[in-house]
Structures are given as C-alpha cells and as structure tokens.
Image 1 (cartoon, helix red, strand yellow):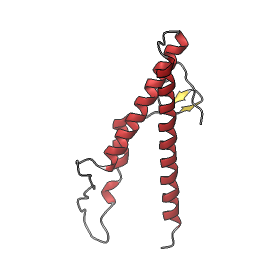
Image 2 (image 1 turned 90 degrees about the vertical axis):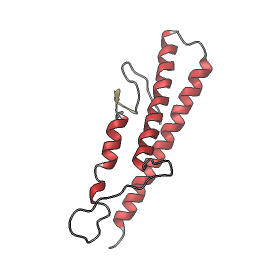
Image 3 (image 1 turned 45 degrees about the vertical axis):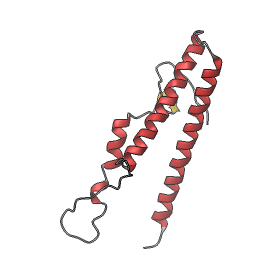
Length: 129
C-alpha cells in the first residue's frame, strides 16, 4: 500500500488526493448506533441493552476509537515531517523515517484487522440458519 503526501491532507488514507479520515468522535457514534436491537431475543418491548466493557470500563467502541485516533496521530506526525522535508526545515531524517514506518505499519495493521472482520462477518452471513 502506498501513501502520498499532498497539500492540505493531514491524515487518513488517500484517494485521488482527498483525505478520507473521519474524526474519532464520529466513529464512536457509528459504532454504537446500531446496538439498541442486539440482545432482545424473542422478548416483547424494548429491553435495555448493556454494552460489554473491559476491566477499566472502556467499551469495544471506545477501544476502536482510541486506536483510530492513534493511527491518525501517527499519520499526522509523518505528514508533518514530510512537509518539513519538502520545505528543507527537517532537522533529523531519522525522525521522519521512523514516523513514516510507524504510520505505514499501523495502517497495514488496521487494514488487515478490517479485512479479517469483514471476512468473519461474511462467513457468519453465509451460515445456514
């Protein structure tokens, strides 16, 4: 996967020069919006759905939101160093190389996890009832 650096693009993956990043606050709303119908199996009325949490009280949606925020931070840092390199203001090339590789590895990991989640969803949807 290759990434490009363009003017006005701060983070996210790139599609014809446009940033496709989503603010972390929007992501948590997208992840939790459909949870109201989960958990009511054969009962009438609306039951309060309890979202599972970890030991520290964070939900899966919170963890995903934090992870995507960290990814956007890594990409933002790499973009900043790339701009400094393009303008000649970069003091240490090693910092840029480290930041670019961290952003690349994090993006690869997120894409791989997303692909596995979609694959698992498709396998579940193909199961006979």
